[in-house]
Length: 189
Image 1 (cartoon, one colour):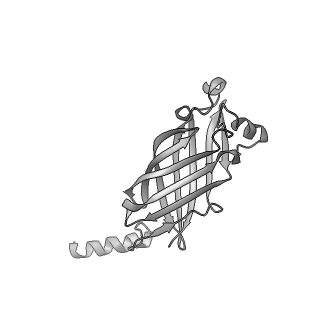
Image 2 (cartoon, rainbow, N blue to C red):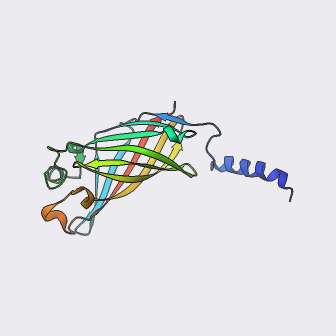
Image 3 (cartoon, rainbow, N blue to C red):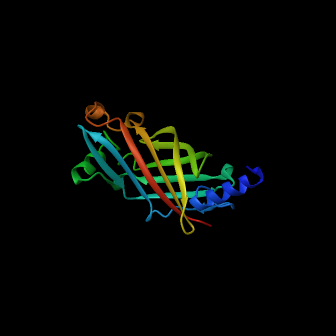
């Protein structure tokens, strides 16, 4: 086999199936909260439960060729929770859970970004909930669609790490693992 043509063949195949990102840097700024989603799932007494947060604001400065300067921040209005029923929403705002009167927002502030290959990244940062800050690593996949960046990610949080569901709820009626999923949409600049 003539090895001179291997790189060109691999490039042609990769571009055909969309496996390689564009050859130039892609830069994204700000988050379109209207087009973005933030949801969570958990188990309660053996049943899978689903919820969302309706109100959040994000800022983003993400250049695929300059990850050292990348930055992301998210502020979530905790009283915008929709856990599927007004009773659940009211319960989750109480002091044993989010205590939204004392802690109205949760925040995430990035501290670094690492490329994982194949349009995958890990965004490291500080998550603050109920006045408790923890380091988290957030795996993210970036897709570009008509000058729009779509950042899909998922992570598992332990509610006990943030004292969410203290007291009578600290047992296993509600799972300790909370699966967070998000889709953040940002325009390319």
